[in-house]
Image (cartoon, rainbow, N blue to C red; front, side, top):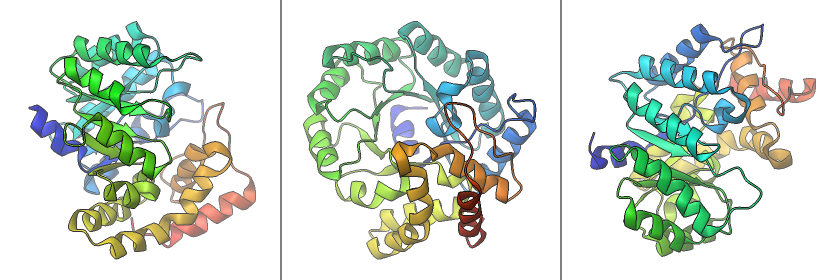
Length: 300
């Protein structure tokens, strides 16, 4: 793919698949494949194995590679793959090279997990990954409100394959300023807080959004992206209203149940087990019942 092709793939619903677990706690390969096929059949064109909805930080290195391999195999020719990579620099680089070997076209670089992240260090971290896979599109995952747009511009000055940004700071005004300080037209801006923030972020320059909800109801995510693309804000907000409570449950208590709510919804539909790994946990009975009631009225 060219960088232009990769940019087009980002300006869409960027699905973050869950990682289903079997009764013995291992990755359930067959269910993983089935859920991926459901996403593809639902019109998803860009997949991110190894995202936070996929419990990236709870998987072993071998499991992260397995999930990427299963995704690449199922999606071959049907969707673009953007593999989530992270941890220390050598691990992130090795994961990016593994993604390239699988035929993935992009990597998403998770926010560095370190108690002390300097602006220059952030640039160096991402530059190391981008330099290791110059033919792949590289998408930083920005979650730190303190990072200035100028740092991203600095990174892009030496790494032409840094083509997009998954911006996940819950502040639309800050996003608008960051994008313009970094270079609004230089990158594809992906609303990294999913459908809840997509309408406001699109008004400030985003052209794609990530989604965990798409695992449950691909049609709703497709309806929102189509409304946003056409400039039909009222239609986008109708989708927003339908998913509001579901996303509020995911975001509560610092997003403690973000993945648990998605897996509970899938379990209520008979699509996978509800199990999540620590530090996540299952939902109380009343919340489980509420999630099931919400999704019962959604399209597939």
